[in-house]
View 1 (cartoon, helix red, strand yellow):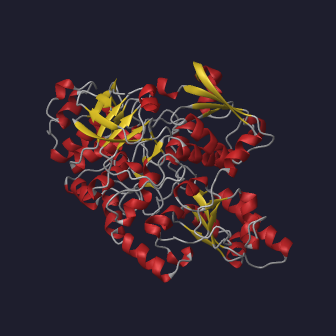
View 2 (cartoon, one colour):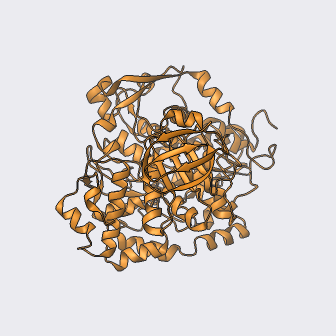
View 3 (tube, rainbow over the protein chains, first blue to last red):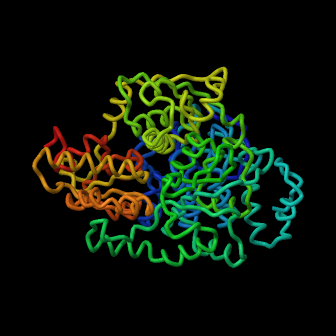
Length: 147
Length: 437
């Protein structure tokens, strides 16, 4: 069933992709830890504390999450994975974006020219509705359609 | 950023001029980054940074560090932080203490090949001194101790949470790179933990354990439950009293590091102990706060849920890292005494598992000046290092090794197995894990 959610466009754009969902906080540094150093063409989630994502491919996905957690090193993780070409396409936050994700994604945008799109404040209902593999359409006004 | 008028954040005239490039293109870009960060956090304005920094960007490997190009651009523009800063532990190049194989040393050397250039750039950007490398910067031997109420822009999750909670300073959990850029422009978003409202607690955490719990397990439990919220913790001062002495400081440091690793906690209050909790008590709690009760079973269940991530799950431990975050002086003495006593009890001279204790350069200097204690450790074949154990797992440097630790933070990011301190003493003395061999 097609459902539409309205959030706040933090890093705006019009894109489409496939959802990858975690109900737990997304630990950025732990999730990319292995792939960042392995020279792989795609990032496989290496956060063993997150059974919903561990072992799954993160690259080009639209990650649907409550927020990010973990090390402040993740500020440098975002521009690094963007420049390696293994970043997710977008991050959709059910809550207000946290300071680590906000800082990392803004630095990536301003200093590398690679935009990882971000919409926040989509609400708990969004995270309850969206499932792995769902088609997602993001509009620059922060509208997110789950198909 | 062309359209300054559409910003929600209110900027001063000076900030606008920087944003318009009137103090150079590089500072303009730095300000643009900090302003967009403030917009993302829905800050009403930027706040002036009022004290020394502490940053996570201490070694030059990708994924942790700003690129050399970025640092060079900042230096070429003659930019520097408003106040000096300390950094997390430096590159793990003290090979005489790290007990690595030659191939591991070669790999680390390659990963950290830009170390000298990186350090030189950071000195130019405001690094306090050549020994200012630790993830425990507020120890007296290091001396980066912000006063209560000081607005900061710190990173290193373990340090930001300590500065906020135990010292009463005010910093958001800033990420790598944003930490440096904020301190260069001297501004940080007036949002979140910098504000009074952001420091209110939305969780009442009741500790009902039968004894003082392991701080790193307790912190993980709290972090997993409250995620990014602020907890108000009651029940701890049954065991800890109402004074933040050295032992309490160590406990709170370890608990906070785990809170920040397993969640995104940037501030906690402990009833009758941490400064804002002492002053305001339960008035810090919002009216519709959630609650979480932690008892012995809760913590035992969490420990039991940790999977063994070693390649050979039945291996005997090969190496042990202690000091993530870096050990304090009193913790070094605790380990010295515990290891020495256990060896004496067993009639052994040396430990069975290669063990490395990690601490700040200035803490190790002071410790080593106590010849008796230092010789006890060296005679037991224990090693001391200024490194960060986590760096020894980057790029699979330690792949396949059966490593044990007392750090729940290290466990979160690597295949190392976690054990509480007392169990770990037995493991490193005997070389075996009780009940598994």
